[in-house]
Length: 194
Image (tube, one colour):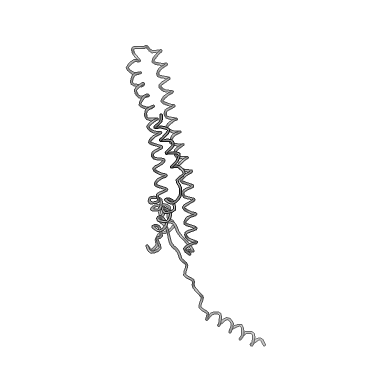
């Protein structure tokens, strides 16, 4: 009886070893995230928006800085003529203004960085969701990211779907209604009336 059980066990083992394992091909691809962010229209628009805001707000601050420099130059030429008491008082006022301008520059930079950071985080989250949906729709088991923070050291070019993702993202962005378009037009009309 023991021999029969051993023979059956060996037979089952031999049969199971003879079966070839089915290997299903796993569909993978990668996206070059640095190229994606450079060529994605919404990301370009976002960058341009904050660059324009920085230039506009920077011009306003630069005008204040120019006035301060002019006042500082006038102070130096008038200091001897108006006496030491006047020079000390006026010097303290100029120093206070200079400090306030420095704080204003810092606050402006922080404000723009914070606002753009919030929108950029939202954009990146949207791109990740899009790629996830794209992967599901197109039957990918994995879609990897390469670029500045790459975790893939090598991949064959045939697995690069960056251009496909950029095209679909740009098409989706072009088709979506622009929320900022109307207020910007109203702002320009309001400025023209003034």
